[in-house]
Length: 266
Ligand SMILES: CC(C)(COP(=O)(O)OP(=O)(O)OC[C@H]1O[C@@H](n2cnc3c(N)ncnc32)[C@H](O)[C@@H]1OP(=O)(O)O)[C@@H](O)C(=O)NCCC(=O)NCCSC(=O)c1cc(O)c2ccccc2c1O
Image (cartoon, rainbow, N blue to C red):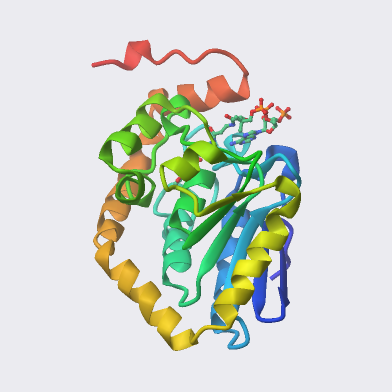
């Protein structure tokens, strides 16, 4: 596959995947998601690989979710294949791939992890954050939501009250605040982030691959029912994206103006 939206390299048993759209703070479009799935599958297939590191290009952002400028007037993000579930992005497929790859995935969060970008780090096995990173959900501000892993699995990590706060208020949290709510595993100075992620991946490589694989499956099994919730979420999102209410959120962001949701209150 010709890679335009990500960087991918494999060294000493570690696969490094970098979302590479810094001009839009590493927001993802349909092609970005397809390339990410391709890279994770390549790392899955490669017997030499024991851990994967996911990060973002540049210093500003890890990933800020769906590229609002790529979203069409009729809702979705462009991809019309069945795996897009009607939203024009194979996001659900990507989430499943990150969960099911039998090797730990470490998110190295180098800046903003917002919206669908925040969901990506939530799904990863481990998160190491730069001390400059900012975290949060933004869907309700721009007429979107992730009612699957992004909310139900998040609640398992930070608890119901905090997860509801994160989604209802759409505020941003520092790396230290995320450490306190156990949403990240470690905070390091920004300059040391990639080194810290490599160090953890190398430690994992010293362990029994079968034990690590079975542990990942075991952790996954307990939250596996969320996949069904995720399918329902994506199905409803495909319909929501076609509404005036969802369009208002996207348009307000692109036009850099205050959003007007009041008329949609029923
Ligand atoms: C992240 C920010 C808080 C940063 O704010 P700041 O003021 O520092 O920077 P700018 O706002 O000026 O942004 C710089 C530059 O990047 C562009 N940009 C930022 N975010 C996006 C984006 N998401 N899409 C496209 N472009 C983006 C911005 O326009 C600027 O470029 P200019 O050329 O205009 O200068 C702030 O940027 C911010 O709040 N961004 C929006 C975050 C957001 O709302 N993300 C999308 C939420 S919806 C979503 O992510 C999502 C999640 C899912 O799980 C899905 C699942 C299934 C389908 C769809 C999903 C989905 O869409």
